[in-house]
Length: 150
Image (cartoon, rainbow, N blue to C red; front, side, top):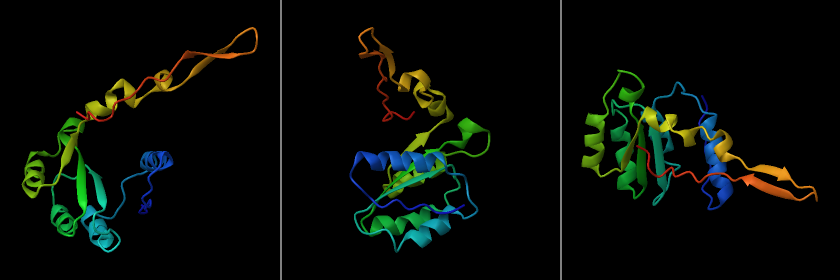
């Protein structure tokens, strides 16, 4: 419902702030095309812009182009609606993004069904206390590679 702006920072806490913010988001009433139009004055040259959307209609693409002309680097994570339901096809928008030189990554439902998307025990340390009172790790978190999204 409300726009969230996280000022850029180069530290590990920023990644957690981004993930925490993303986890609490819900779709709002404002169309993406309007959000992009409003953000144009706030996003400066050479900025990175990450768009995460299931909107494959692409009516927002025209509003994204001025960012590229101004030297910003947009990247689109396109939630593929065909993998979540039978509504929408991302192929047309994907072709338009390629034609405009905007990097995009299709994200299918299968990404969220992978075990590392629900870490449970895999993402936690497990400890045992020895007779001498020393904590000994029994299980360490497994590394998660999120670079491969499909």
